Image (cartoon, rainbow, N blue to C red; front, top):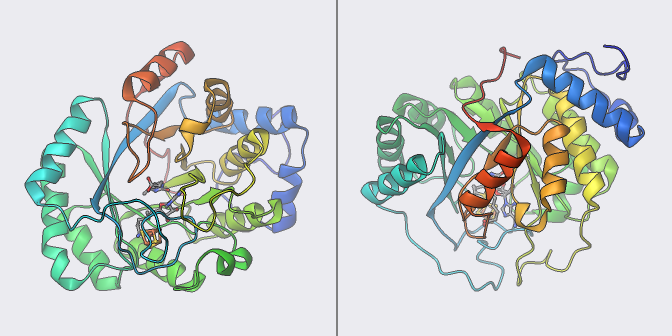
Amino acid sequence: MQGTHPLATGTPRHDWTRDQAQTLFALPFNDLLFTAQSVHRQNFDPNAVQVSSLLSIKTGACPEDCAYCPQSVRHETSLEREALMEVQAVMAAAAKAKAAGASRFCMGAAWRSPKDRDMDKVEAMVRGVRELGMETCMTLGMLTAEQAQRLKGAGLDYYNHNLDTSAEYYGEIITTRSYQDRLDTLAHVRDAGINVCCGGILGMGEDESDRAGMLVTLANLPKHPESVPINLLVQVEGTPLFGRAPVDGLDFVRTIAVTRIMMPHSVVRLSAGRTDMSDEMQALCFFAGANSVFYGEKLLTTPNPEANEDMALFGRLGMRTERVQPPLAS
Ligand code: SAM
Ligand code: DTB
Ligand code: SF4
């Protein structure tokens, strides 16, 4: 493509090196954004955005020690814990999200991994939300191969399981499970035939090489995740990462652009942290290749922009909300 960087072929590759990713990060901003936008419009409608709503189906008291997370039992946050919700209440929340314009409903649980006794209930949630005509996504922690098969059997469309950062930096953020544990669950999800949603968080004190390393791991998976959420850390008082230096907005946009170039067929989600972003920064993220957001006033436990504010922003940008399918198996 004329004027674009030669590393940007616009088709999926699985042999990225960290040097190559860092070369992209180091491009002049306009060259990087032009390249990312060119790759984006080669593969997607540049004016379409996919919107997913989130619900926390089991909140707080999580045994894991993720330093960013308000739901860890090890951090003193003001969060009220809540037991696993009833199926009817989950369906009511999904119906409300659908009426507000969401096409996918993502259900998250503060678990290290689901207990087998919880599986019947979460499977019923998947069936119920699907009956409403919505796509389903769940994020429940680590899964065994068998649990992934059971979720597939219930009709689950996507499973979210983030790598969060590079393999090297991971141990600074989480000690109660390993990077390999995460990769194993991703393989079980992939083998079960469920679409993979996997990305990370910026603003945890990682450097550019960690951001590049995480994207290389994602892009070199046997198949690119269909959905790649890029979160900006939501700083919650009481978590160890509260008070970290904020991410430079332009560095965040760069990361979206590099993600778009390295995983050209994936839907890239501008995820948590949008309440701290200006409309102009979000517009730059869409230009850099983001084509999905979390929609509705709450993420799992923290605030998200109001639905009407998002609709107003999409209107100003001439963007339509619709189901955005990955263009090809990649
Ligand atoms: N407990 C499950 C797990 O961790 O796999 C699922 C729920 S967990 C809350 C889902 C994801 O939310 C995490 O992997 C992390 O990427 C993201 N997350 C949690 N707290 C966050 C925060 N404060 N800011 C940004 N992203 C966050
Ligand atoms: C993802 O990458 N981000 C979402 C979703 N997947 C599950 C979660 C963001 C959580 C932000 C903090 C909170 O609201 O608790
Ligand atoms: Fe638990 Fe998930 Fe939060 Fe980690 S990110 S503490 S596993 S809810």
